[in-house]
Length: 198
Ligand code: HEM
Image (cartoon, rainbow, N blue to C red; front, side):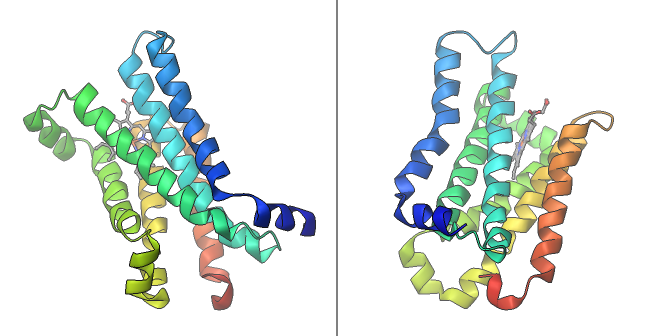
């Protein structure tokens, strides 16, 4: 564990950014070379949503990992911002490519489909986190208020995971596993000693 921590201390955060950009680069390449299957818009939407959820969950794993001695705290912010960027693109893909910017249909879907409402709740919960992710915003808010605000990450992850469960018909395993992971992380968060939950 010590060796991994030492490596993590030396690793520039740019590496996380570069790795985090890979799914997007792959998507652009696959779209440009017509490899997204019969429904490319849907494929784009699903790819971005899934990666957003995975980055969000990865960012929530950092604190419990610290408890078992693995200190990756330097990468938490990058993972959180990457999650926001993928989810924001996921939303844009829906509004622009799927809905064709037809705002009446956007509003109708929002109202009619509970999974869209849950997704929106997740995106809105992430917005203040993204806006306060700079050093300056953190200084201005103070660490206690910043930490309190960042509990919204759990709201976003729960809403996002439920959005996934509700949108898939029946009870398929994948969305349930993501929801279980988020529920487990939330339980851990509630039971971790205060000094470890920064
Ligand atoms: C925290 C926020 C969100 C997360 C974590 C999230 C995640 C996901 C995931 C994992 C999927 C399914 C991917 C797959 O099947 O491989 C999905 C699908 C989808 N999401 Fe989201 N999403 C979020 C927000 C939103 C928002 C704000 C909208 C639009 C308002 C949206 C619209 C959709 C649509 C239309 C689909 C495809 C549904 C279908 O299969 O037809 N999502 N999302």
